[in-house]
Image (cartoon, rainbow, N blue to C red; front, side):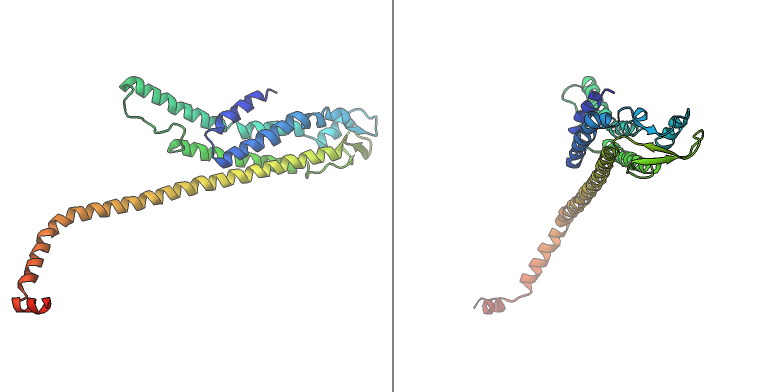
Length: 264
């Protein structure tokens, strides 16, 4: 499998991500993709060949292996990594769509025309929703695959010995898994990194929503302040003649003697 494509994809989407998103990309590339390519594939190797049973009954070995390992861990993790990284391509495509619209707008109205977007890579409008939906999808994919591993293999451990009673085995057959401890360690490692990615994506959603709410409240407060100032600026000229009349009446209501007394 060509993992260079995923590396280029992760590097391209990195510049449009938040701090949480960059940490998520680092975990996915360093602790999941690299570990998967370098170590996990070699640890599993030819699983069916390393799975041995103490019987020579034809077909019993294949049936027992299919019963305990219906889907290979390596292929399941490969699907998980593909599904969890490809949604990032939507963000890159959305930014490319914005840049194409901006380019066509400059061609049509000239270089000095009004820009459609202040920053094509800034998460505003539709790009914000695209980014948040990709995060939700990533959380769903990681959670689904973590549950599938637990449900299909009945946990995250690998016993040294499994007993098989499937047909056409003549009786209860003892089967042995190669390198069970090493496989258990890698399985737990991949599950823990998946849970870490779920938490990071969840925190990133909270950060984006909180930032958007803060900006909305700040803009609403600024708008109310601006409207109040505008209202005062409009009503003050109307009140100015009344204020002048009120001031002149106050001066006329005090006699001169009283004014002297007060002056003294």
